[in-house]
Length: 185
Image (cartoon, rainbow, N blue to C red; front, side, top):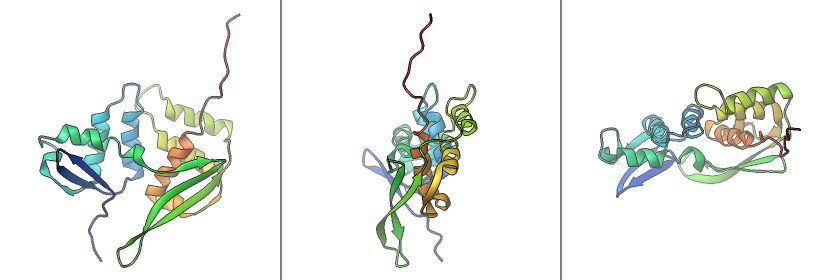
C-alpha cells in the first residue's frame, strides 16, 4: 500500500510550483474563518492551507522562502475554488474517482435538500456565521444545515471530506436574510 499523498492543487508563483493535498473540513473551516472575518486575513488563511496540505514543491514557496507570502495569497483561494452547484434544492458536486490502477475518472455526486431549516438550527447557524467573538465557522453552520435539510443523496457526500466541504459551502449560502425593510415611525 502506498503512503503517497494525493495531490489536488498546484500553486505557482514566479515559476516555482507547489502541490497540495485534498482540502479537509478542518483546514477549510479555519481558512474560511480568516477569509470571512470582519477584517479578512488572506495571508493567514493561505498559511493554514499551505502548512496543512503541503505535499511537495519548491522550498521558495514554503515558510521562510522568498515567495512564501505570495504562495499564501494563492493558497487562500483554495477553499473558494471548490466546485459545486445548488439549484432547486439539489446540490451537485463534480469530483474525480480514483480507480485501482491510479487513473481518475469524473463522477458527479448529488443530494437533495429542503429549502428551509428549523428556527433553532437557523439561530445556531447565524451565531456561527456572524459570531460576536472569534472567526466565523461557515462550514460548521453549513454542516448543521446539511444534516437538518438532507432529504436524499449519495452517502459519500457525508463520508468524503472533499465532498462534505462542497456540500457544506452550498448549504452555507442557504442562510440568507430575506429582503425586507425596517422603518422607524
